[in-house]
Amino acid sequence: MSRRFTIDGSGALELQLERICDRVLREVQAQVPTEKLDALVLGGSYGRGEGGVLKTNAGDEPYNDLEFYVFVRDYSWRQTVRLGGELNALGEHLGRDCGIAIDFKADSLQKLRSGPVSMFSYDLVSANRILLGGNDLFHGCERHRDARRIPLSEATRLLFNRCGGLLLVREILTHRAPTAADMDFIGRNLAKAEIALGDAILVAYGLYDWSIVERQKRMTELAIPEPLPWMPAVQRHYAAGVEFKLHPRRVEKAATDFLRDHIEITGLAGDVWLWIEGRRLKHPFASIYEYVFTGDEKCPETAAWRNYLLTLRTFGGSAALDSLARRHPRERLFNALCVLLWQGETLKQPRIVRFLQKQLRTATSDWAGLVTDYKRLWPTCA
Image 1 (cartoon, rainbow, N blue to C red):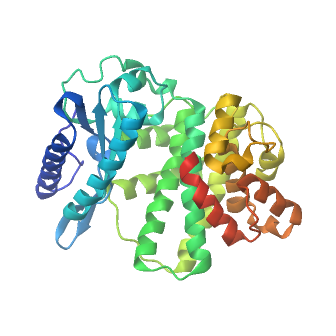
Image 2 (image 1 turned 120 degrees about the vertical axis):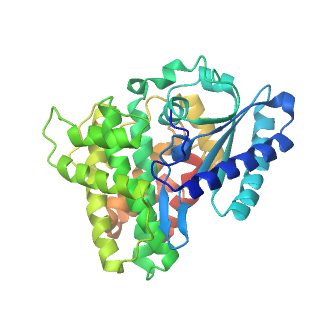
């Protein structure tokens, strides 16, 4: 495995990232007792050796977040939550000092070994940079290296999060002229959505790979066994998204140009969403409207008792008698996202407004207010 953080970043950038990792290791060791600290691992694109390189007049700079995983032993759930809060504060402090976003996640190797395979676990176990811990750190996690074990629900969850980003982009383009910071946010989220469309398809066909370079090759060569008229456009956008991820840039465009890109990518996202959900739920959907209002359970893999507890945690005790209380709260967000992102014009219909109000448990009736309510709930279900 390459010991570089990037594919083609300068030596100065590689050294900068190396020094940041050294400092992070020292800070984590100072904060977590030695007898409790199992390992520190850099995941994400820099941990896999494919981090983004932003070209500037001052030289190469990092662009993506640095994602560190702190593996601890013998920690209770409550202690892990407290440690997570402390690490978040450390990440904010280090991020300000180092000029790059630094994220921490507290976890345990025992939990990882016994837990279900996900896109996250596959990526982390397959390619990483171990800052503290032995070469056999992920012994017992071999099944997490098999991409064919990634369930289709992970593709849906990826699309859910990236389409949420598209909703935020639409909110900006609808309500204000984009600032320079807005343009950076928009460019980044459009590229993330482009990549997610292809990644979801690769997961569905059992062809996902930890390397985005390899994934692009597979998307380019993908021979699909079914007629999907939107596939060539997805492949084209995937290539553009990968190029942005590896060689990001500060995008400056007129709002109308961003809107045109957003409309095209959002339309493709709707096609891929329906295709993925049709496969996952074994129920083909002819339209977003049919998907939303079919009435079928959209998270059938979850237990009703757990859904009920999650509903109470998400919406409070007042949701105890809600007719949707025993369905996973994420189902409500699936429905709300689909209406707000792809069916916004239907908000002129009182029935649709009432439907959204029930999904989000709100009295808000306008698009902007409903998006605000959606954003408030989204982190709890992402």
